[in-house]
View 1 (cartoon, rainbow, N blue to C red):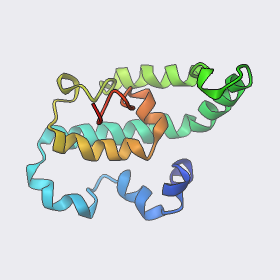
View 2 (view 1 turned 90 degrees about the horizontal axis):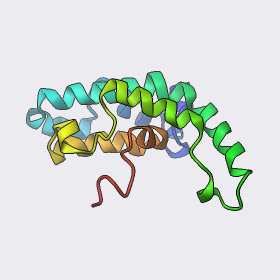
View 3 (view 1 turned 120 degrees about the horizontal axis):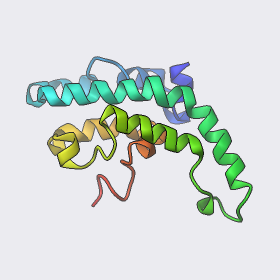
Length: 140
């Protein structure tokens, strides 16, 4: 069910889903392993747990609510965020991973934050729930 909950490009490649949400680092990160601090591994574990336990089980409801809200406006960008979005934000805050892109929140270097953002890129709902989406993170 996990692989089916990720975006189509990831769901079409089950190995990618396994790598992104595995407790083990993807092979491409292994040469950097010695540069990652214990804080990185703790943060990665928190983020993966949030995605697996909170975001993916509620993803379908998030999209159902969003579709209903989009019917009430003349353009999708005018629709408010669904109630599920705010529930997931609350859970991200409880886990200490809301506004995670801020250095004072994540306490990670750029080279440690980047692989975590790669995981969030594969799950936009988590990205939004953690308030880590563009333009606030990664491209400013």
